[in-house]
Length: 407
Image (tube, rainbow, N blue to C red):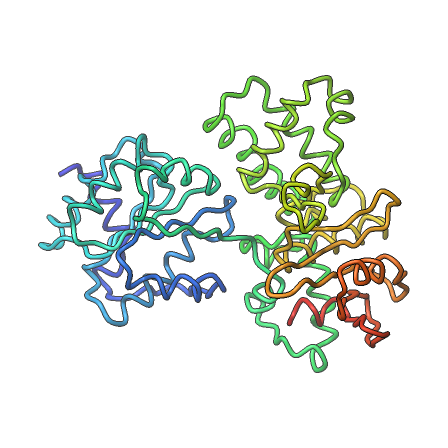
């Protein structure tokens, strides 16, 4: 057996000796969703930005499995330094070390392995194991394997910490009335760290800036995206991202941006798609009940995390844009509404009901746009998120931001 591989396996699977995970593993909300799929045979695939906690999520699942399973049933392996390692060889090494094959396999950073989907398929089809895979590139990389893994895979995306998760990581109670002072202070810090778990205890602005820029954005733009797509100059992608960082929630006119950057409209569209694929930006569509019309309308672009910590803008207007960005992520929104007359509602939720949500990080709000939308679609209810004000006016409910984020 390869000694380097053997050492890596023993080091990566301490529960083989101790029977437990001794390090603290803080639970993520996504675990609740994944738990119901664990008894199913299908592969569980988790993707997300670098440093959002995919490995920790796996540890949380392993910790739960250890309650009812033999520790030697569980195999965890990361391909960070083993890109050429064959998957079957890892399973064979586990079997040799533990005198039994694994029943649960966790492969971290699986996208580093060439032709990984076909290799996973062979294991899935030929061995009685539950397989978990993760990758720092987006679900698109996994979706390219749909034909290979059709019917064999459930996909999940792990995002940066929500504000509720952040409070849990910091040990701050969610009771807004009782802990309002602590929650307000925590929110200011949360906006700066972008929801990245390793930054929850960091206050140094320079360290936060370098961590997000160098450890997450630049690796995604200059490593992950070029490895997936053929790109001659990734710096243009970074330029587009910088424009969105400077103005989150902006409506992008492809033609205008094409002229500004001196590249074709088709290239701009592709690069925006790549940024979405890398889970760095989120796109919202202009709402219409006719979905084909929606696709043709202008689109808004946000970051997938708060970018206050990496921006040199710190004015009130910019902070309001960051707050709007956070609300879009919190609501998992897909739509906004804007008319040719420039009436605009920030978020349109269209799930069980249609609900317009306007973000006003102040205690003054113009109700005309949301009222117009409600009238157009015969709605009885709308929401305006405020800084502190709470109340009702007709069918419009005013909700303080922090109270809404904790709902």
